[in-house]
Structure formats: structure tokens, C-alpha cells
Length: 354
Image 1 (tube, helix red, strand yellow):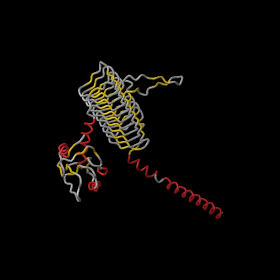
Image 2: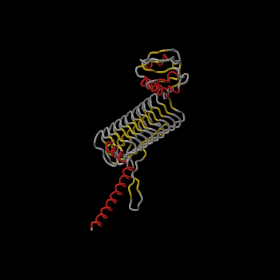
Image 3: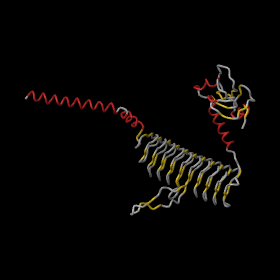
Image 4: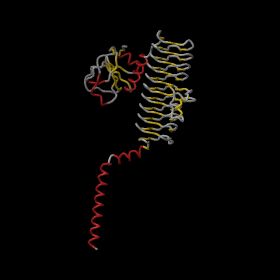
């Protein structure tokens, strides 16, 4: 796709300083700019690059003053970073703007597909599936019986959604994710074997949720595993059966949440955090990477680190001590030597007196 400076200025509400007819067909960082590329300049740290960049158009602050001659056309806006982000979103929407149904897909007669939807090659859509308007389902996805997908949602290649699961509107699920596989439920038997407990619930994902690649969300044993609206999950996250994640909570990669735990809203969870089962986390909690939680967090707004987790202020004091353990060990050794020497001198003095 190709755009002129005049086109872009119209999209972002900017003013042009230079050639309004110059064209771009790609995006680039200002330090890596090349002809026919669009870049932006927001951080003063990168100001020197505007004099050497090869980009044809650069978004800059409205009050930017060049100290040297420029070869690029400027588009002046109030907030270059936000304007560039908006352009990225527009470009992404254009790129994903596919419609139609591939002849190589398999769609049950009882399935219902909304308007302007896209169904790619080798997609399988089973009985009684309901798909909303403007949904994009990329190749090799699988939708089990009775699945419901809200309008504007995108499923990238290889997404698997098991039967009876419900996905809201304006969601994004990245490639390789599995929604609704069985929860990890096995009952120990007297002969040391394990009997599988049937998992007959489902997964409910509310609106405006994004799920990263190869993330797995298990169906409930009974009822629903629930991901509330606005949640953002990174890649390679495991969400166990009957878990509930509150609104607008964000979780980084490789975190694992065991069954029946409930996380509050507006929480921020770092990577590789482990949650034990059946625990409750309050709202607005922040948890650092590689933390381990074995019990409830009842105080809203807590900031926790470590495994097992402790409050950040205490954690910092402990780390300060930990970083000096070698010195403390050496001091203890010196004290032991001094004590032994004093004891030896005391014994010698006692013998001399006698």
C-alpha cells in the first residue's frame, strides 16, 4: 500500500513541511530509515537521526525546529508517538481486512457466520457454531460444536477452540493457542492409579481480550473458566480449570495459574509467576517475575516479589542483606576467632592467678 504525505497528514491531523506528494509504502525506525519509508521522532535522544535518516517522511512534534538541512518531508503533529501508533493500527486493520470463505474450509450446515467474515484455508467449523460480523479466522483453526465468537474477533492460524466455549467481541487470539482443553483433574485410586474426572464445563472469554501465542486455557470441571473483559495474556501461559481472571489484568509469559484460583481486576503479573490452586488475589496487585504464590493476597494494591512472595519493601531489605552475605560470613568468622582468642587468654590468665 502506498500513501502520500498529504494522505498521512489527513489521517493524523498534521501539517506538512516539505513535499506533500512524496510517497511511502513502508514503516521504519528513524535510525533505520530508507527511501519510501515513514518514521516518527518523539524521543529527544533520537533527534540526531533526523539529519541522517533516509526515510521520506517523518512525524515530528508541532514545535520541532531543525538545526540543519533536512532531506525528508515533515508532518507536524501534537504527539508523534500517538500519531504513529494510530497509523500502525490503521495499517494493521487494512492488512487484516480479508473477507470471504475459502473453498478449502469445512463448515457445518448448522453453523452461522456473520457478514464481512473471513474463513481461511483448512478451517474446521463444527455444528451450531455462531460467528459474529467482521470475524477473521485464519487458516488451520478448529472450532468445536456450539462455539460462539463475538463480532470483530480475530483468530490467528492454528487456534483450537473446544466445544461449548464462548469468545467475546473484539478479541485477538494468537497462533497455537488452545481454548477449552480438559482441566487437569484426576482422582487418586487405592491401587495408585488415577481416575480421570470428566471436565464438562467451558471457557468464557469476555470482550476486548488478547491472548498470546501457545497459551492454553482449560475448561472448567463444572461451570466456567472465565477471562474477564480487557485481560491481556502473553505467550505460553497456562490457565487451569475454573480459574477466573479479573477485568484489565495483564499477565506476562510463562505464568501458570492452577485450578480454581481467582485473580482480581487491574492486576499486573510478571513472567514465570506460579499460582497455587484455590487462592484469591485482590484487585490492583502487582507481582514480580518468577514469584510463587501459595496463599491468598487480601490487600488490594499489594506489590509482591519472591518465592514465596513477600511485600516489596521487605524483599528489598532481605536482598540488601543477601548481597552482603559473603562479607557478613567473613565478619562472623573474624568474631569467632576473636572470641576463641579471648577465651584462650582468659583460661591462661586464670591458670596464672592460681
